[in-house]
Image (tube, rainbow, N blue to C red):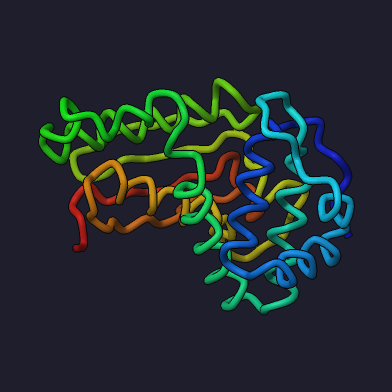
Length: 210
């Protein structure tokens, strides 16, 4: 059921982080069931190596996203995708590049809005630099607009009636929590390539909800 390969890639390390996140959220058997349904059973016995060579095709992520939806229904799949996205950040993405400095004292003592202004573009830059997921961030008075110009989650999907990239939403939610020192933020996907938009766009409210 996996879509035709895209020729767009994440580094192998990202693939390893995604698999670890799936296992954290669903257990080993649950992860294996999702990979089998997604047509990606080769990853069960042959996990991604822990390096930055580009090796996980965007179509593989789309297949995992679709398998979660098919196995658990739209609502259940959405909840699990959010949890997987959060686990991905916790399991490894927070240690990449500029984000690794978020725990430094010089960053910790910054005002909240300064933390957001530095931390979220740093995350977009990491994706753009080491994968084929080109991401950008724009700022308005009350919001940050996080845009994914080439999205893996909805790769090959068309005719969907509403945005569906919940792994990305969960990842952003957890990264915002990490960057801010423990606050939760509202993140809403306002545009999605699968619904016919040119990009996948995520609106982040600057004011925390907790």
